[in-house]
Length: 431
Image 1 (tube, rainbow, N blue to C red):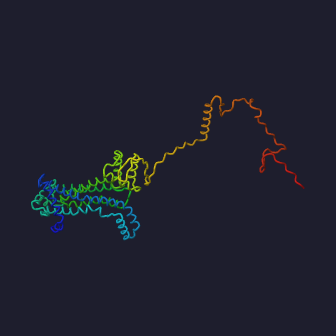
Image 2 (cartoon, rainbow, N blue to C red):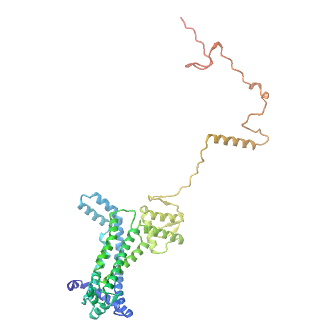
Image 3 (cartoon, rainbow, N blue to C red):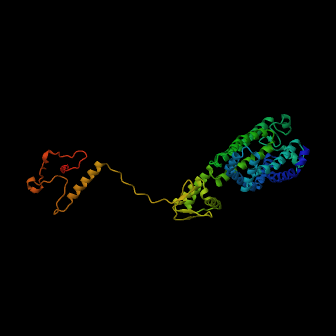
């Protein structure tokens, strides 16, 4: 163990020095030998480390989103060169280089935390074995061995024997109850963090193996924490539980204020942003302007949530500008689902319903009756009814004469193949 500690001395010494500095502050408030002083020193160490890792966390978010964007292209390359692994790897590296994406960027915060984790583990293990490490001298070592967190010594483990636990001034039951509760909380926080990422902050429009991989890790990581947690000292469990809670809160903040495009979190965020912008008629913070600027710059590549946001602003007379601001405008253009921008046309005149022949005749008769009733008195009224004038008053020339019968017994109707009317007699043939 001394050999391993000497190998990690370049990091164990700074970590032990930070813990001692925080302990000197908290020891004045809670007492130098209390679990609160040592426990809060470990929590403060975690917070300090995570604050320093915020730039890497931002880089991790960008890398993860870039990888999600490249998933469709990666899937095409895998299908195209499924029988040529070397060409497939070359095309993948070419795609990463063109897009400026590094797959290892998403693991940077975890990799950066690993040295501090191992250093803290060796510091606490040295406290458990009664050996000084780093800047922790004999007096600090004795104070740390007396510290208990809810009845469990700082250096005790779930797998320790009863004799070893009694040597630290505690009972095996207290140690196992406290460590079991902390392991469950540590695994639950890890599961919730990963589930929150999968259900809210993943682009639901892209179905790729990357999503299946993340879903599998949602169940694998908590199990791994539970298995390895039984071999961690109580101080390391405090460290890991604190970093999980920090990650969960940090991720909730990012999902709420800067969600992944195409995710459910983005739909909820843009809905809140629409209400806020339409109420104030402007973007009020730098973050809002950055989001609006990114949406405007996409143009026809916007997803359905972003198009809905732009259309909602248009309906209330607001126009999003390329710099992220929102101004009043007269534009009535609406972006359709395929990304094309159209202007609503004037509504067409509705054609009357087609009427039947009986309805048209009835309407015509009614119109004629109405026009006859409304005609002036000096004009004769027209009506579709028969005239009331007596028949003997009609002129005699109007009477029809019976047609004379054709002479010679000729038929009144022309036979087939002959012209109608009286036929000219045939001339006798010349002999």
